[in-house]
Every structure is written in structure tokens, then in C-alpha cells.
Length: 113
Length: 114
Image 1 (tube, helix red, strand yellow):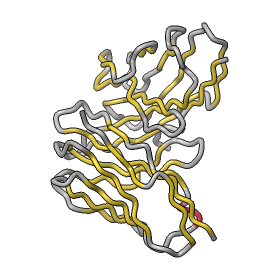
Image 2 (image 1 turned 60 degrees about the horizontal axis):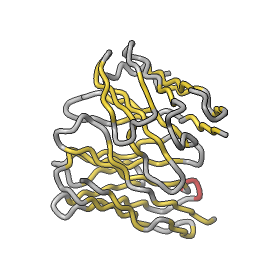
Image 3 (image 1 turned 180 degrees about the vertical axis):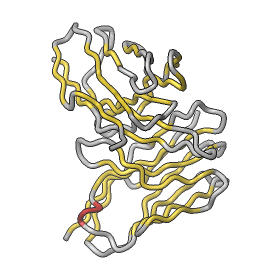
């Protein structure tokens, strides 16, 4: 059974730092991987989606990488800002599945001014 | 504006009552999903539907029911059989575009049962 783990569970950094959030999964037979942002009490906002055949995706200050064979993905945030404070969730869709996602528990990020 | 709407944002019910959570999308997406989120936990799949009039149980379907009579709508009923219904409920939808199945989420409904 696929398990998705995110480390660390919480992270606090000063504004301006570059940072990396980690996501690992136990079964490499994934179709794609999505990174989401969740603000307190809100729904999820999709940040980046990486297909299993891709190595990385970039959007603005965000860069997500995927190493399917080792079961790992990272989300790199450059020049962090207080507005980046949120919980970041990683989720995988398995190959041959009906499209439902399997989620990690998230990393709660706090960027201090 | 295209998107997913969930109503209401907050819902309070007494134990033993059934309650229905609304989810509507105008994205013309084929698939719709219901997830449950508890504090400190990842999202867990309750039910999903790939097409109208068809749906499948997810990992934690016990005590829940759904219907998919229209492409745009996928309501979730939390029945009195659900032992621990207080949670944050999220609805999502997706479409297959060139092999990509990106999921989009609604704003969520926080259900409190006392």
C-alpha cells in the first residue's frame, strides 16, 4: 500500500531564505505527483504537477523535482516571503488508479519577517 | 468564474442527524472526489465518481453516501452511522487533458457534530 511521508512536519525560517520541503513515497509506480498549498481553514491550491516521466517543474519561485526510482520529490522555494506561510501537501496518483490522490500529512511552513 | 463551490462553509448538527454537504463545479470536469481532513492528518478519500450515475467507495466510505445525478454536482451525505463525523470535508474535481489529471479543490466545509 502506498505511503506518502513529508519531512519536516513543521519548519520556521526567516524571510529571504531558500528552503526545501521533502516528500517520499514507498511505491514508485506513480502516474503523477502534485504539490498543494493550504492556508488555515481553506481548501487546497495546486502549485505544481509533475508527470512520472518528468524530472522537474517550475513556477515562479517554486521548483519541484521528482526522482521516481528513489521515491522522492522536493519542493524548492526561493527567496521565501511571509506570504509563503502555509501548509504544503504532497500527493501522488498511482498508475492504473481512478485518479484519486494519496496524500502526505503536510509540512507547516512559517516565514518570519 | 470557473471553479468548485462547497456550501455551507460551516455546518453544525446534533448527533444522530443526517447532513448533506453540497459540491458544485462548472469546470466541465468528468471526475469528482470527496476527501476528509482531520487535524494533523493527510486527506483521506471517502468517495469518488468518474461519470454521471456511477461512483466508487474510497478508503473511509463507511457512514457516508453520495449521488451523481448531474455532471456538475456530487453531494455527500454524512449519516448517523458515521462514528466520528466532525472534520473538514473537501471536494475536488479533475479532467483528463493530454494525459494530465490535475485535481482542483473547493474551499471546504467544516462540519461539527455535537
